Length: 215
Image 1 (spheres, rainbow, N blue to C red):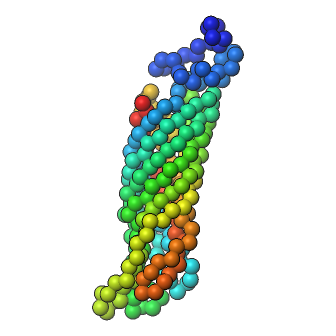
Image 2: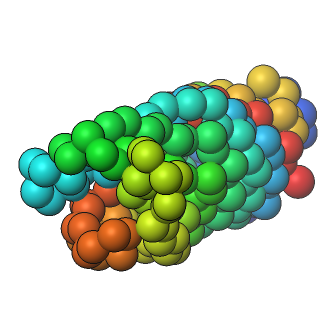
Image 3: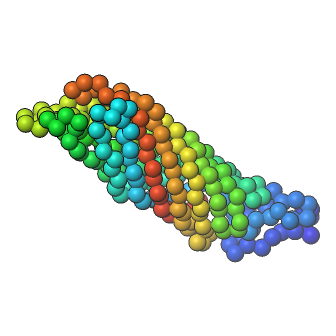
């Protein structure tokens, strides 16, 4: 028993900062410490659904590879881990199809998205199961194009909305962590000005894999 009232728990890479959150008998001590800042890279697959409000407005779904960066900060108390994370992702989401009026083609695309989120989860030594929720941002571009002449009516906006999801993260070593995650983002209702005004309610599904370096 240490002079601080609880047993110092062993860990592979030295004493854990979160030992200070143990109970009097040291029963809630963690072996791996998730506390502190981290940065990393991520990649995966994204799915964009424009969800046009009226059936005569054709906007095809699209999917494609996505990649970007993330960073954040965790605090740990016993098994509970909580913190904040930011990420920025480049995407290649683009689809074009004949409009309801076949004299036109209709298209929709998104080149990037970002988020600011809270994270909360439970650690089982080196394994962290977490949920996440916060604010999402994305660019959205659409158009209608006259097939015969190539005249294009386009509009582009930065969308804001909510995002939530969850996943798991594993500490391969003291500094290196790997993760897998699913997130859903919804951007509400947006009016786009093409050859006339169209209303869409875009949402984004993302399957993400990443690696982080902890400080």
